[in-house]
Image 1: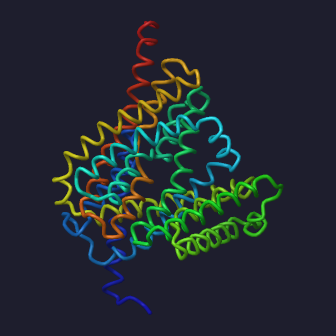
Image 2: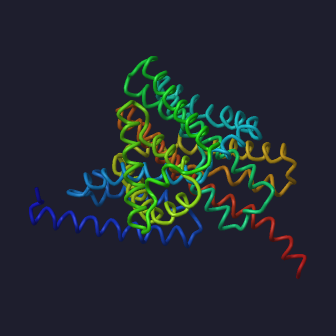
Image 3: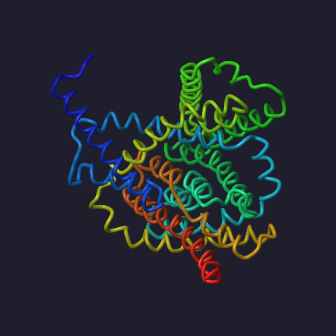
Length: 392
C-alpha cells in the first residue's frame, strides 16, 4: 500500500520543515549551553493542532518515531550502567536515595492531591518531580570537565538509584493507569523484579550471551541484531503489562564489554533522531491554550523542585565527605529534569488521565531543563571568578 502522490509530498515537506526547525533549535541550545529538550517540547507546541504551524499529514509518522524514541532512550540509559554498578549504588548510596525519594516525590504528590488529580494522578506527578535527567546531567558533567571530581560518583550513584526506582515505578504506574487493579500491579512488579534479578545474576557469570547473538563483523549486523532484540523484549514486556521502556532498559543493562561499546556507537545517532521525535510528539499532544492556566503551578513546583533536588545533592555530597564547592556542584547538577519526566507524563496522556497533567509536565520540564544547566554554569562562574580576580 502506497501513499497518494499529494499526501506523500505533504508528508515529506512537513518532515523536512520539522527536522530543519529542530536543527535550528538544537544549535541555539548548544550555543546557549542548554539541553535541546525544552526547545524540542516548544517545537511540539508550535506544530501542534492549536499552534501557529499545525501539522496535517506527518503526526502519525512522528507518533511511531516517538514510540521508537522512548525505547531507544531507555535502552541507551541501560548501557550507561552495569549490574555491578546498580548493586554498588544500593550498598553505598541508599540513604541519599531514600532522601531523594522523600524530598522530591512529595511536592508532586501534594500538588497533585491539591489540584484534584486523585491518587493515581498525584503519584504520576510525584514521579515527574522525583526523577532527574540522566542524559542532561551526564552531558553537563562532561562539558564542565567534572568527571574526575569527588562529587561526581555521588551524583552518579543517585542517578543509578533513581533509574532502578523507575524500573519498578513505571510498570506499577502503567498497571494502575489501565485499571489492572492490585493483581495487575503486583504481577507487573513481580515480572520486573524477576527480570532484574535475572540480569543481576547473569552479571556474575562470564560471557555475553546477547553479544554472541547480536555481535557481527559489521556495524550493520550489530545495528539490526541489537534493535531486533530490544524491540522484541520491549514488545513482550508491553504485552504482559510491563512498560516497554523498562524492557528496553533491562536489555541495555544486560549488555557488556564490546557489545555495549559497539551498540552505543551505532545506535547513538538513531537515539538522537528518535528522541527528538519523542519530545516533539509529546509537545504535539499538549494544547498550547492549556499551558497558561497551569503555568503558575508549574513555576511554583519548579522553585520547590529545584530547592529539594539541590538539598539532596548537597546532603549526599556532604555525607560522602565532599568539600564546600563540590557540594554546590552536586546540588546544581541534580536540578535538571528531562526525558524520564516526559515518559511518565506520556503514560498519563495515553491513559486519558486528567488533561492538566500534560501541560503541567511540559511547562515544568521546560523550566527545569533550562534551570539545571544555568545553575551549573552559575556555580562554575562563581567558583572561577575569585581565582581570576586573584590572578590579576
